[in-house]
Image (tube, rainbow, N blue to C red):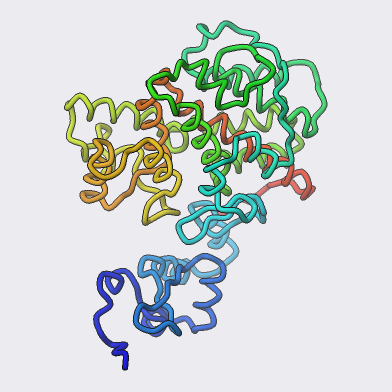
Length: 385
């Protein structure tokens, strides 16, 4: 006979029973189960009784915070802006139980085989054929980083001649973004990851094109993040394709979004040279740049996939550094760490990590743009004092 009151090993430190959650928060079991179904509270199987579940202790804070705020119209609206409940209905990407899914399919699994072109078709219905899209209409030397070149290209598309605004144009803009990041013209045949590998001279590893392919797929979308929301706001107001995508690029550049990637690269360079302690953040925060993600308290699956593909596991240098930071801060490496790592491992040009982020995320932005247009609604919140 099983003793269901026996110690539950380390799981017990991180979980609570349904009875404990309800007692601590004052909610009913029916409400708890509703929170689980909505992804607000995570449930795991009870190791001692298969008929029961245990609930993540950390998620109880969400319930308590919600009760403290109350459910007034203003408090609900405020909660949605800061990692709150979804404020827009979207079928593009879902994040749940430490994983994320592109239209219902595990994105990490998709990254095993798919190209960015495949994912753009899956997410946004795009058909990105290798075609001669021409070359950037500026000298690459005039724009120091891949991301700078993507921004310049998209700004030129906004102010250039009016073009059709449907999926064929969106597919062309995606390929133009890749060519701008690469700083070269189109060869009319290569997929995006091969174009980037060739242009950036990623010859330090024979698997460089495959590593770039996986990273691009993992960057393709991540639910209602700040840049995707910016694209949707612009699209809801009737902005053109390039104008909406430029809004996404501008937002991605922020130091609390994609701009964390170059910050993390700088931190990694200092660590590698022995100039700073790995757990020290040069700008004075508690956690170094590139660590911690509110949606992945147990670690970012995108980063795990990139680190494993690069061989950074076990006793490998950056695997040990990441483990030490996690031990000292409780925060796991985020996508920014993974992209900065890839930039170092492949000896890519300065800023290539953010360039990968921007080119890959273009697929998700386009999917959000068309989904928002289909809704026929303008995003226009009200202000409250």
